[in-house]
Amino acid sequence: MSKQKPKGRKINRMSIIAIIGGILISSTVGYALINSMIPVNGDGPVFGFPENIYIKSIHSDQGFVFSSHSGAKKSISPTHVAPTIHLTKDQLATIRFMNEDKTSKHNFNIDEFNVHTKDLDYFQPESVTFIANKAGTFQYHCTIHPEMSGAIQIQ
Image (cartoon, rainbow, N blue to C red; front, top):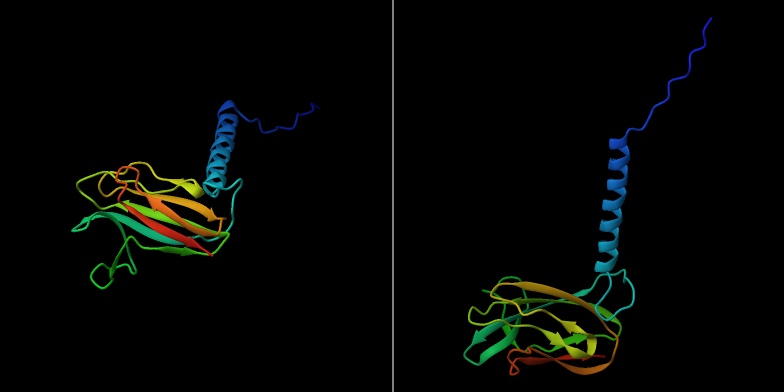
């Protein structure tokens, strides 16, 4: 009588490569997800829902200006030129900025909170999340057009 060796499952080279690839992809996605939760003026991820603030740049009869809408539809919402942004201290906020000016590039900056967008072409958006960790009134501005400015009040 001969003894049979039990047949074990061997992991082939392709399976090992697939497992390592899956681990690398999962690690990369997890790292990107955690980094996306770090505000520009924060040290680590913040788990919470930010206050969304929608600001756009337009060219009006007053020249280049920042504006906001109080609602989603332009036809029923009034436009606020150089709107004052109101936040409470230590509130998480996301500025959602879009350049709706066909004639020039624009950017959005709040120096005290390290909020800076890149120079955006027509209809390009960018979002920046930050923590309103200082009380007071601060200015936001466009570095390309210094006349474009507004205030952010943090209480």
